[in-house]
Image (cartoon, rainbow, N blue to C red):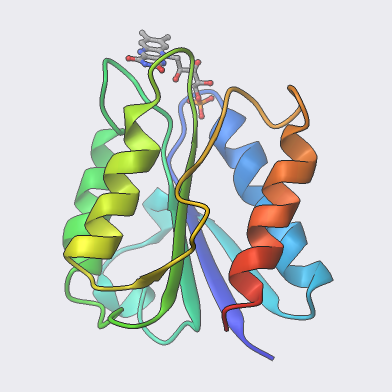
Length: 144
Ligand SMILES: Cc1cc2nc3c(=O)[nH]c(=O)nc-3n(C[C@H](O)[C@H](O)[C@H](O)COP(=O)(O)O)c2cc1C
């Protein structure tokens, strides 16, 4: 059994809801999921030692939330190379954040990124979002 770290940034909790459901998908698959708000991560030691990592942020003004940018700078030193990874985020119309996070995990951290790409949902409860988020968690769990 592995343990997956899911870290989210959020302003109005839509991205938190997605994080929690991805965590459910991981647990349904028989693995542990630790879902943490980005403010709980103090340094790279808090990111090390997991079997997979999934990071998420909503998009505001075309960007991820600043605290998620800082998390990514910490994660650069967390020895994530080769580990399964994914990204997610709630958005309104353009949704750049999840893709930017995904690209950083892929190109800089050299993680084994899920073939689905980033999970972008307007909200967990809209248009099959709950199922999509659970499936995303299951797919990453299967890569452990
Ligand atoms: C001031 C403001 C700016 C926003 N800018 C964008 C944007 O550039 N692109 C986009 O797709 N959504 C944008 N949104 C929509 C948010 O991404 C959306 O409401 C999302 O569900 C918020 O997620 P959260 O609850 O996790 O913070 C914006 C929302 C607000 C209030």
